[in-house]
Image: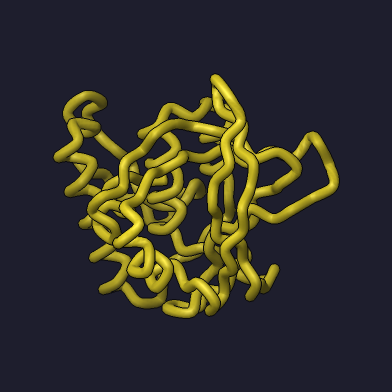
Length: 183
């Protein structure tokens, strides 16, 4: 959901609204083909109470193959058409849905930070953001990658004005074992 991360992969990406996907539950068990950690997946359920909130983006059709490669289409994700409820109407959208899953996996701290910051960037409810913050994550064993990802996040938060409006952003897992503060 973090716009700068998507725009880094697909420069034409433009957020067009927030919506919810009914009868789906957010899971963090998609096997990353790049680092072996857990990534997000909106998993189909039978319960009308299950809802995943997210952001709808428009992407230039010419850039979609690059996004497909970055997301792992046909290598851990399939593309599915879903119906998203927005504030004003229901829309049809394409979504990547995990095909390679492992419920024992956890996401890395930096990955959950991107998800949380994206949710906050797009104004998702405090309750939903709180549920994202409560996800149990783990330290990335590749500290260089973790530092690189956090540096990208901090740079883009600062350039968006998020840091200047709110003074600071706390990074790390909820338990605080790897917290660092950007000022």
